Length: 160
Image 1 (cartoon, rainbow, N blue to C red):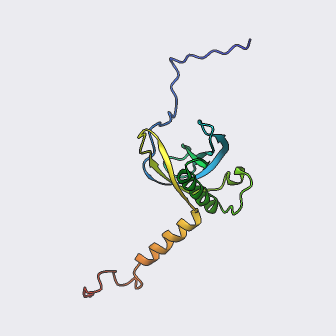
Image 2: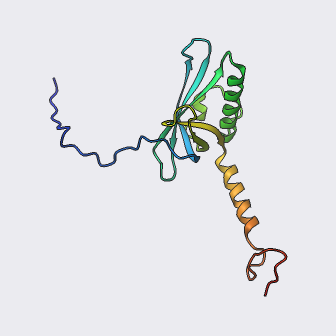
Image 3: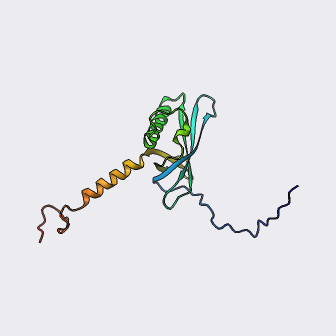
């Protein structure tokens, strides 16, 4: 039998991982893994996605999303298919034949605290990183004064 000595009492982890839920917001993520599973009742299937945050203060943290793509409750199924469609479009995948086509492509995930269990997160939507960048650039152009020598202000105020 291999010998290995380790004193758990004296070990101090350099970076203990936070276990509390992430604050609500948009996070850049990649799909690390995906698996199609049968529901606990055995009446449908869901896609379980493991997402990893790849940017910002929470880089490295993971979040899971479950999409009930085959479910006797058609409302639940429609919500899951709409969210899957958002993810596919955000990732640039038009026709998916394998869930691995979604892996390792940066997308934005809208993450919230779960309504039923406040110790967990839930993914509420997906968006393309490129679309978000285009939107923020357009918004910053709209708030920039067209004449840099004159400060932007209210149209009815006199400017010196």
